[in-house]
Image (cartoon, each protein chain N blue to C red):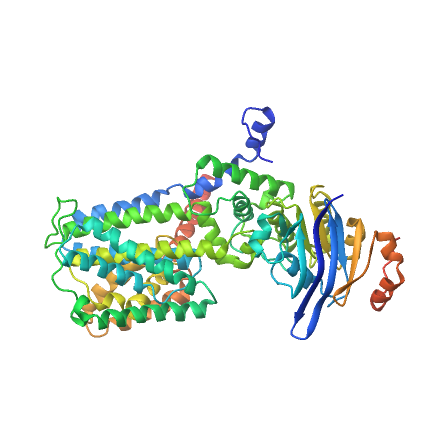
Length: 252
Length: 350
């Protein structure tokens, strides 16, 4: 299998603090890859380096064989790299339908100023409706996003990313803050992600990680401590040691 | 996934399922009855208020100026305290052209808008960096500089005395600007309406949706793949052009232009008008202009010395008790009225 997204020796300093210490990671096409690690391990920094919010001090980010280390965020998106955010970053007074329509229109390259064609804009809205339907958000398509329950806002985060039809999708703690009752929906949405999309999941919820991931990398103090399939990771003594403070996780 | 043809049964079922949603954007862009009534009012005013046409032309000019600010402030979320730079530049461009012997009004508008657009495009790169506070300072600074330049170049602009000797030709070679302001009124209203149509179309396009997205959450727009800066440069340039057209319109309808058009007061006034009328509502700028200019006119008749005092009180009350300005007030009133009539109907029905 070919590599969809790859980092080579990523290094990032915040002042004297080294938050990424030579991270090298390869994500296969169609992968279900999870990145775990204790608080402060540098997971969010790593996602910001991948998506272009931060520029590394050294190292490379390669997307489908193209070096994107120096590309700005919006270029990376058009090259097929989408992300969601740990804390909801939606468009508060826009409805889910408007938000996803915006994302679809952006992917199709029609948010630049030009005379819109009615037929084409209908297609855009229909595609947006179809994505909302897939994530079971169609019934609240016309309510302002800020009025939705938190769990549904998380789903809208994912809908926005899916509307971009990415080749690689970065999910930054999708389960964060989702109440237990609404988690089922989220698990199902993640299970139904298109199999062609390579997914990198960053998550604290170990249930979700071991449900979802077919490969796990463990990030500790800015470098990869271990990598492998879930059963190998859960048996790894170094990983257990890192998590010992919070009691080691057992896969049934 | 969107089907390519509309003929297969699957595709038809698919379209049926999302019909309500797919109509949505078009429904949002369609004209409401109240909007049509709104645009019939200026026609009625022509016949009913023949002695107030000069005042109402000022409302039209100010409404166009406010509309241009609303595009960047209300929709794209870019705040400016120097929007008069474009208004004044457009005004002087049209004025100088007419003074130098070419008083054709429509070309005056075009050139006023064009010159302002060039300044808007050039300064957009300064303005669009940084936070709201930086934007306030940079826009204010640019406008102050322009004011001083116009003041210094007395040989060209007439300085504080204003530009003398502007002669504007009849509109389209037919309608001469008359003493009662009939031509000025119809001309300004038509220009306002045409500009309004353009802005309305922009707002309801995917581009307009992108501007709203930028206002709501620019960071997220980057993550959707939108080149945010490029979108804002275009919006800022269009807003500058429209402000330039408004300035040119003022010069042509009053056959005069002075440093006032570049003053800080002018920038602050238009910002107040947009907030008063309701930012991001398309009609707010026009309503705000009408309210401000008419109340100025009425209050200065009642208490010539203290009218600003009353306007000040009105502003404070509006900001505290009517969020969303006059448009917000009107919308809440309308929905309350609808609820009331619905409950009446329900009661009488059963």
